[in-house]
Image (cartoon, rainbow over all chains, first blue to last red; front, side, top):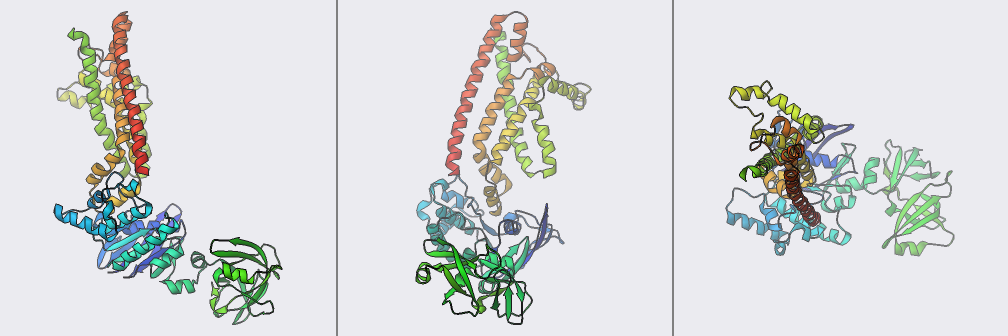
Length: 349
Length: 227
C-alpha cells in the first residue's frame, strides 16, 4: 500500500513542484517554514487542489489532473492529525470520535469508539471536553478519531511543535507505537530533524516547493549532499572551500587545509558541531587552532563558539557542541583550543 | 381601543417576520460566501453590506423602482395580480433589506472565527457538508448568530424611511410604530407620540440588555472553547 505523489501548484510567487513516494515505512517530510510541506499535505488530503499532477494511493488514483480525477477529501480514506489537533470543542471526547462513524449500528459505533480510546489510553476521559484536556491528551484523541475511520493513509502535521519537553517524550512513544501498528502509509511533516529521525524511517527534504534530498534517515543524516539538507539536519558549520587536490581542500574563512574523503565537485563543506573534538595543541592534521569567543551553557550540553586564529577576518565562528563533562575536562585558562575534524565525517555540499 | 394598538401589532408582526427571513437569508449568504471564489467575494460582500450605509430613503427609492408597477420585479408581480407597494408585505420587505446586512456580517464574522482546521478535520472524516454546517458551524457560531439576530430585530423594528416610501403610512395596515410616532408628532398629538416613544424605548432597552447578556455568554463560551 504505497503512496505516490507528483504534483504542481502555483500560489502567487510560490511554486510547489514535488515528486516522491511513500512505502510502508513512515516518511518524514522535512522542511523549514514556507517550504511547502503543509501545502503538500493538504493536497494529499484533498483539502487543496493541485494545478497538475497525480496522487495515487496503492492502485487507487486520488487525483489525476489529466484524467480529471479529483476524489473528495472524505472519500480518500485519510486520517489527518492537525498541528492544533482540531478537536470539536463543543463535543465530548466520545462524541468527537463518534462523529465521523456511519453505516453502522449504534452498538457497533460504541464498540469502535471504546476500542480506539483504549488503544490511546484515554478511556477514562470519554466524557471530558477538549478544553479540559492537556495538549498531549488532545493529540491522543485526535489520533483515535482519525484511526476510528480505518484510513489507508495517516498524515501528521508537526505533531510535536505544541508540546513541552516532558509531554513530547510521552507522545513520541504513543505515536511510535501507533505507527508501528498502522498498516498503511504515513507521512509526518516537520521542521525538526529529531522528530523526523525518531518517528520515521525515510526522509524527503523539501525546500522552496521541491524535493531536494530523499532516502532513508541514516543516509540523509550522514550524507546530506545539499546545503539546505545539511542545515535542516542540524549541521551548524557550513563553509566555502577551494579544492586543492584529490584529497584536500582549503577552507577560505578558516585559512586552513583539511583532508576530505569525497573527490567530486563541491564548493562547500559541512561539519556537525557535535563531531568536533578537542586535541592536544601540537597535533596539526585536520586541526584548526582557535580562540574561544563565547560559551553558552545549556542544561546538559555546552555550545562553544570558536574563532580560528589564522583566519583573516574577525567574526568567523566555528560552533561546537560538547557535553558538560567533556568541556570541563578540556577547558583551560588561555582559551586556546585545537579543534580536530574527522575527514570521514566531513560532508561535501 | 383596538385601532389604537394597531401600530404595535403591525410593528411586532413586521419585525418578527422580517427577522425570521433575515435570519435564514443572512446565515445562508454568510455560509455561501465561504465557498465563493476570492475574486468575486469582495464585490458580493460590498453588495450585501451596502444597505447598512445607504440612507433608508435611498433604499426605499430603489425598492420602489424595482417593485413598482413598472419595475424589474414589479412588472412580473403585477402581471400575477400582486402589488406589493403600499401593502403590509412592503413593511416586511423594507425591514428585511435594512436588517439583512447586520445578520449577514455578524454571521459571517462568527463563521470566520471558527478554526478552519476543525472544518478541515470534519471534511477528511468524510462528514457531509450539511452535517458540518448543522452540527459544527452553527453550534460554534451560535453566540455570534444570536447577537446578529437581536440586532436585526432592533433594526427591523426601528425602520422608518424605506418603509414610508414603499409601504406608506396606512393606519391599520402598514403604519408601524416609528411611522405612528412621526405622524402623531406632525399632527400635534404629542400624547400618542410619547406613548409610542416609550414603547419603542422599552423594547429597545430590553433588546440591548439581551445583547449584553449574549455578549457575555459568548465570551464565556468562546473562552471555554478556546482553552
